[in-house]
Image (cartoon, rainbow, N blue to C red; front, side):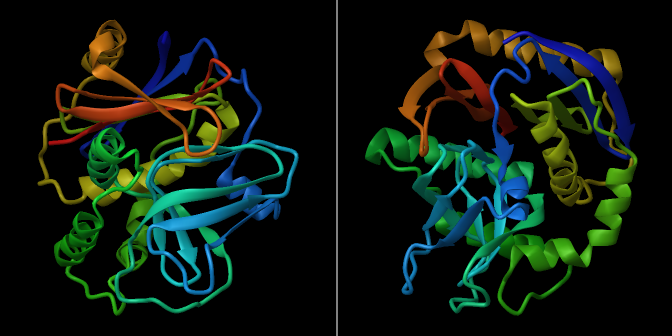
Length: 303
């Protein structure tokens, strides 16, 4: 994958390198958020009884629809987070692997799920990705570790000194929503770019690349809110990485990952396409591709 840094910006302890890749806009798909807004898809419980770790998505449209690992879905019997990125084919019914992020509720508040303003934090996404890779190896399953996810929600409540009646991750985000939104306002998605590398302090925390620039634009503020959720827990005065170092480390990581073929393991995708997963030097991630086109790439710091 050839990436070209386009812009750099820092705010507090967070630095963001935005990049462009040579294959951007080479495959046409829309985001889950856009599809839900236009009523192109429905996300529902698998049955009236429900299944904590599985949902069903009905795509009634003629378009491919993308769901990102870490997407938080609100409603139905309890809020969930998507375990891996998924490309839904047109006119399809797909069962998707999820984890619960609202332990204290198991009753309908709506028949269908809605999108959220944020995605899961880099840490939660990294932990899920590590367990998913292990479970794919052992059980051909996209399951994460549900107990670990619940523990993460509980720890987040303590860190932000709050109590959620249903132990709901969304409640934690909503408590700090104004602060997170103010943080996001310091950044702007560059219209030429389709990917971003995020540093908290001097640590490369997350790297996300999308095929389509418009999908990247939609996820840009969501990913930054999730980053703020994590970065606000770091002590003030954390050393911030400089532009040249950030760009070098981003490109160096991508080069080393490309050259280390032994790090990659291939699995069928949940929807259409295939995943190539890796664990390398404290980073966990995968690339979802379809018809030899990159749909989504992510790398997440696991320490």
